[in-house]
Image (cartoon, rainbow, N blue to C red; front, side, top):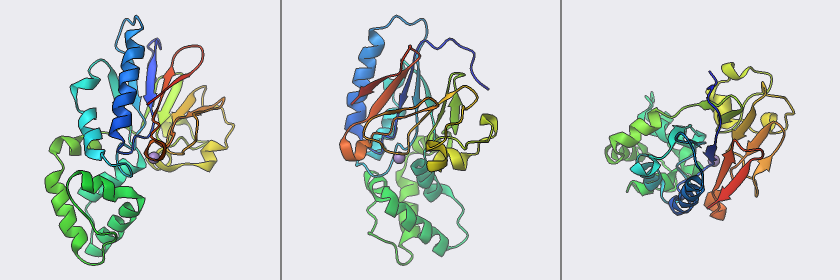
Length: 247
Ligand SMILES: [Mn+2]
């Protein structure tokens, strides 16, 4: 259900992908932006998912999400497709070693090896035998319980009433209340090319990289490819026009 609260300000941050230093730099600037305001309540801070993979410091990024640094904000942590890869590798009940291996190799190909290394597990370029099982056991031992709980508790979306936040976007033609996780984690062209009015909401998303934040009538994309560019983006919403803060 949409929240009925006045929207003084909402900060939304795109795909972090293990880029801890850009995250720290960005959060300092967001903190300064917040200090310059006179808000009557804690502002909302929405993370659009993809905390892990590709960049070097996934573990530090999740530590930061669990730290007191975020106390000034009402936080909402959305799930990204990469966070789902990580959680599945850790805890899915694979029915055979081959299925685990195939999944592990798919995750390695998506940059999962950087996440494993950040937890001090060092996978081969590709699994060919029972090694995936051994590495999974090591990861299960190395990843703190609080990190597992963080992955388990990620939200699929957040609806502020004026904005609808989801990692990848939404499926056109489907009511917002009936969107499914698979679309909100993975969708690209069908959403990106859509001119649909999404029940009056502007959909705020990451997942698909653009050089600059992309502001359309029905959506705002803020994945500026931090792991390639070092540039992490925060959208500042709730004023007349969206604004952006960069790391
Ligand atoms: Mn991503």
